[in-house]
Image (tube, rainbow, N blue to C red; front, side, top):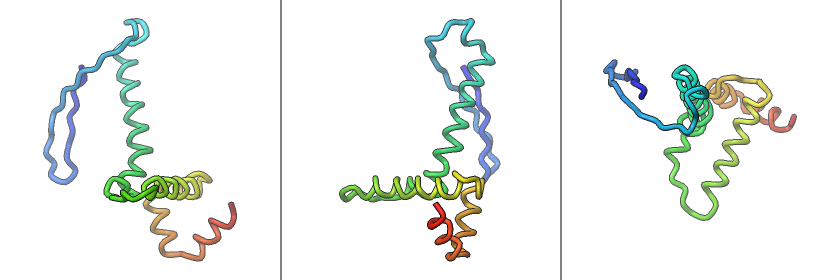
Length: 114
């Protein structure tokens, strides 16, 4: 059982969530500290990777339903992330988007220098 205290950044309201989980690991393999580490690791991936797609690139708000448009958009978003983050040019995607929006000539240079 894990109890979370979640604070809304907009309202400051604190919500307490209690979640339960199951594991096939033995007690020796899954101490409370190890289970907490595994849970935090999962959410680190979720927040670090999926947040880029879902929020920064607005993938969750996209309503592309015809043909392969949604798949094509995922490929484009992955390309954008790879170009901007992959070579460690920018570690923070929103900052990179603002920079390249303001400097279209640098965008072309980035693409052509693969």
